[in-house]
Length: 176
Image (tube, rainbow, N blue to C red; front, side, top):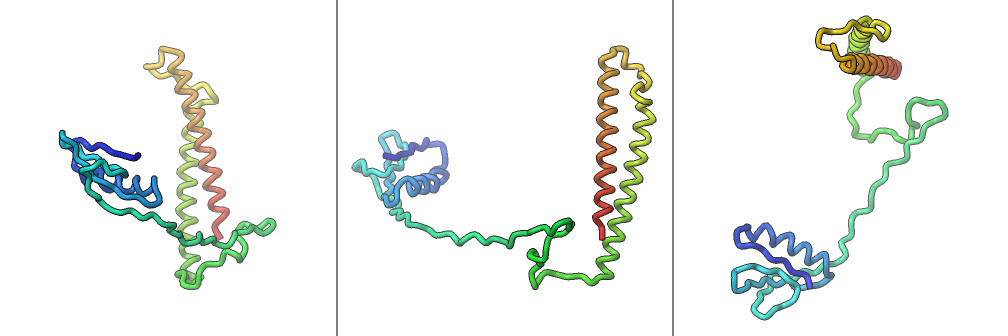
């Protein structure tokens, strides 16, 4: 027996739909009854307790979902940097002419070069401040642990900047 008790202060509509859905999931074919006890509590159940009213008749049949569509497998040719022709774009896919694409690629290359220069400058500044692992102590670093924490953070920042530079260079190399 599936049943739900709803307090008086909660809007009943918040419980009707989920109760109907749960009742439909629990049984393939069932009737849902709405019962009110002496204290005014509403009870939704799948069995008739005498003074209950039918809310809805739920008939749960097999609902077929559409078959999943699979895109053709993207295969990589030996040593190729782009997918093989199996993943061709659809016929209605918007296309741009070669000159427009070349201009977009040039803009992208210039933006990436600017980012590369900024990241290289940041790395040079970080390495200068790092001073081969012995940066100057600051006034608030009387505690050696604070100094070590700042040195470790500087190492992390340098490593992150180096990885950013590598990633930007790879991205520039991928531009046609």
